[in-house]
Amino acid sequence: MTDKKNKNIEVQAGKPIYGGKTLSQYNGKTVMLERALPGEKVMAFIKKKKKGYIEAIASEILEKSPHRTESECKYYPTCGGCKLRDVEYDYQRWIKEEVVKDCITRIGKVKDYEFLPIVKADNSSHYRNKMEFTFSEERYYMSKDEGFDNDKFSLGFHAPKFYSKVIDVEYCYHQPELLNYVYKSLRQILKSSGLKPYNLLKHTGFLRYLVMRITTENKVMINLVTKSKELDIIGSVADQLMENHPEIVSFMNTINSRLSSTAYGEETLLIKGQEVLLDYIGEYKFEISSNSFFQVNPGQTEKLYDKIVEFAELKGEENVLDLYCGVGTIAIYINKQVKSVTGFELVEAAVVNAQRNAELNDITNCKFVSGDLMQLAKDGEIFKEKFDIIITDPPRDGMHPKVVHSIINSEVKKIVYVSCNPSTFARDVQLFEMGGYKLEKVQPVDMFPHTYHVETVGVLIKKQLL
Ligand SMILES: C[S@@+](CC[C@H](N)C(=O)[O-])C[C@H]1O[C@@H](n2cnc3c(N)ncnc32)[C@H](O)[C@@H]1O
Image (cartoon, rainbow, N blue to C red; front, side, top):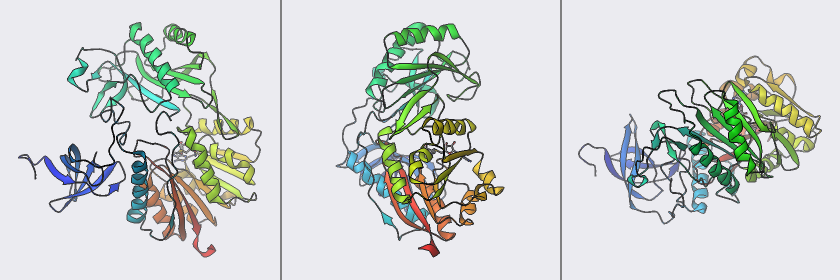
């Protein structure tokens, strides 16, 4: 059934696929359907008609899945930070397992491998150690009940499709309660300060982003991203906030005067307290600066890294290559179980952090090299030394084919592939399989409950060595 403009269709959701979607059929065409659970009958709005398929979003559930629950969050699903907050946690995990399996067979064309059940998260809410909120002069009103009071101050998350508008968020279930408490105080101080939020369309205003971090020891770092440098003003905000919040040990101010909409800027200044936070993964400590990449779910990071160690089957004699090493967390975590680790990473500041982190833990068998792995692979720079095992943890886009081919051409027996995107993981696995490797086993780890994101660890072995 469709309406007159052919924009609304009635469909039944099929199997889950990557991206928080399900597959469906309509008039012989494949529909990629958002916001529906497998088995649900929905009315869906057609977003795009492509050559071979339709993209649609469920607008009304006609027959509800028994796995739907109630979401406790008043901003769900509009804010977009969660896609599965009204879905039973057991069922979320089943969806993620099915998605990983589907990617491996459909994209990777691999059938014969061992699949281990997803590693569960102990906490499905309040797990993130880093949050980023956006200021805007233009508020996105989710419903008429919000009053349309023309409030010129909004702090929260970007509204879907309205890139200049922001949903005014008072509380977020992703962040620990202590961060919610600090967030509430800071919102009050900033709202009553008269400081102007940024206007993305006019490039006016002062307050741009708020980035908050919290460590496993409940120490908090605040980074206020502003359009210009006003040290007295920011200093006074920091004083007011830190007076009542001893947990805040660092107050930073990033200046971003550019048009680019990011929380990074041309300089980051220390306003009050310390410049870095100290956090732990297992027995190891790490210095984290406001812009460092650090795994966001501390409860699951150790489980993920233990899985890497288990899959690598380290004996203590291996020279390990750690590709896309970030601030050296994996290298440092495994240092006692190997002979040496060499890490490669694009961001120079992360390499400096990695070296510093090794020193901080009195580790001498890890070294870190900066550079673009695609270029390093092209120039033959990665395999100047011999390695026994590769651990690779690329960004969402996966590995550049040149990097994959340089590994295939090396004599490395075992690859442990850590991925935050099962579709690019599967794509790369297919290349490795064509190059003489065999995918042995795979295990997803749930690092991001209530979202569709899933971490996957896989181990590949060079075939003739099986
Ligand atoms: C998913 S993170 C992994 C970080 C680290 N392994 C960890 O567990 O914290 C991916 C890393 O790849 C780096 N990266 C992205 N593109 C790269 C490239 N072309 N060459 C080298 N490193 C790159 C990013 O800067 C980031 O630190």
